[in-house]
Image 1 (cartoon, rainbow, N blue to C red):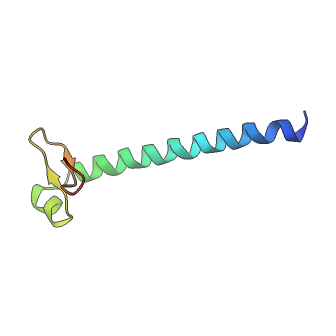
Image 2: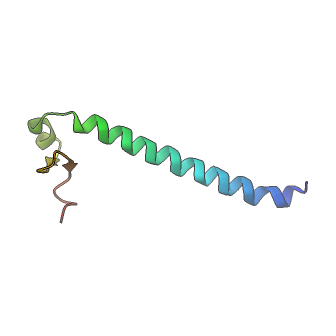
Image 3: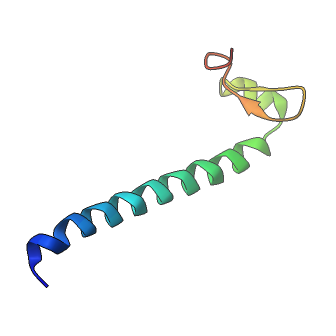
Length: 61
């Protein structure tokens, strides 16, 4: 196969892999933060919503 034909495919696959790794890292971090006490969340600048989810008040509407 010609190298010029393979390069775009490799670029797309590496971009997809990066997005998958970033999203799994965000989910893992979110699960870890969700285990914190409400007081510790507040110390870190987060809040707990009525349903138990964690959010940053500056980002919440």
